[in-house]
Image (tube, rainbow, N blue to C red; front, side, top):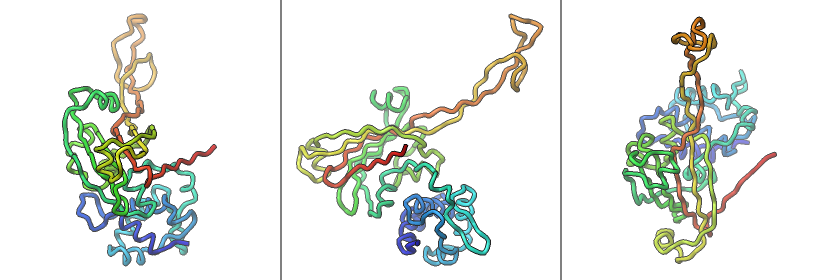
Length: 288
């Protein structure tokens, strides 16, 4: 059974429908509904509230709701049954969980979030950042350093570094970095995290509002995006492409240049975060 009020509040927070944005309203609504489904607010085979109800509750037009639903139907997340309504498709249960950022994680759990910006800047990378992001020392990076608040309590100090080519203007990020990356078709598809227990030094402890030496969970994360690269190969009479000069081994048999596609994961985000040990817990789920 769908809890209508909770669903509407979650969609409103994630979609941020009233904020000025270059992203079309129906795409923001689509993202909000999709995140609500991932959070379990609408279960598999449950019916989505009617377009009229959603439009009225969210203060938007039915056309906007209809367009958002259409996108989710095209993605296979929703299915429309004639005369019955719109339902969450059963295949949704088999979809891998999307990588989420801090804001999305907390909103899924029903918490209010805020952030105090400590730094938004651009500059040359450190040797550690060059290694993590696989970039050259002359390649600039954008830095985001903020104190993350949950229900008005400081919970996390998060330092994020991205290549300047991914985020040219760090001041463009106001709330959710991952929402911005998704809007610009650069949302990470894979991440590798290292977690360890540490003691907070005086500067970190002061910002988090705890005594120096308090226990914290330190998280280091590298996030990747899959990119397709085209490159040329050669083969005698194989594949498609332009004809190259004759092979020196067999001058009577021309060599054809062929175009190949290769997919590679490229790092686009390097995160170092300190979570208060008394307010944050890490949960991991595995299946066989």
